[in-house]
Image 1 (tube, rainbow, N blue to C red):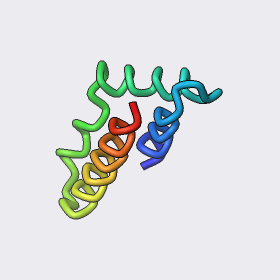
Image 2 (cartoon, rainbow, N blue to C red):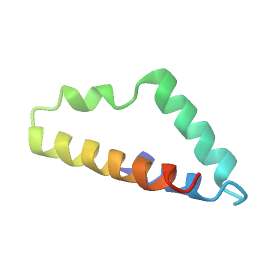
Image 3 (cartoon, rainbow, N blue to C red):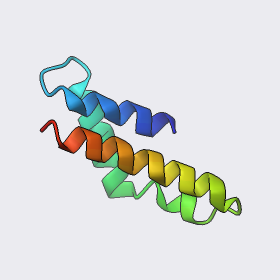
Length: 64
């Protein structure tokens, strides 16, 4: 959830935290960090993580 929250900084490309958020996004894509959520026994928690991730990404994409 912490990583997802950091991705919200992608909304402002001129903001001071944008480069760090972009770096996090690159790492998440390269390392496939969220794949570990698929293996969670608690499917409700995994669903919450993925829903939060997609809500964050879709709300960010509409600003770009």
